Length: 185
Image (tube, rainbow, N blue to C red; front, side):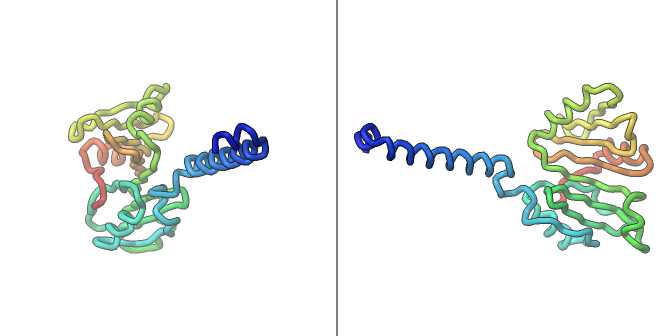
């Protein structure tokens, strides 16, 4: 076969074309996240869920989903966007969920690669506050003076960055620093 390639320019051209196509296909797979584990099969519209249903929805994502545990007097809402981000919202026990989302504790889980390294870069920017989470060695939390209602968290070895949002900045920070953010299992 090697001899055929040396003596036949058409065979060399065909081999080159096959190699170029293979490289393009590999690049597309890598850029799109490989098709495995990213968004776990597509978006899930905001859904009130609890117990086993919530655990199953989180398990279907292919990534670790974080939450703040069960909270009394709340309904837990699960949402997964088409890009794989997951939101767990703690809504009041009654009322229209859509009108309550921006006023409720929300935990976002964002697949990013090396979460700690990414957040360490953000922490170096002016106006960022960095915190240590004493309950998890190596974890980092960052909040911004420009957006104090969100605290971003990364855990060692995790490929998921977590956002803890609450309209009250003190609640968002307290939720993180007290070690309430844990994987949903």
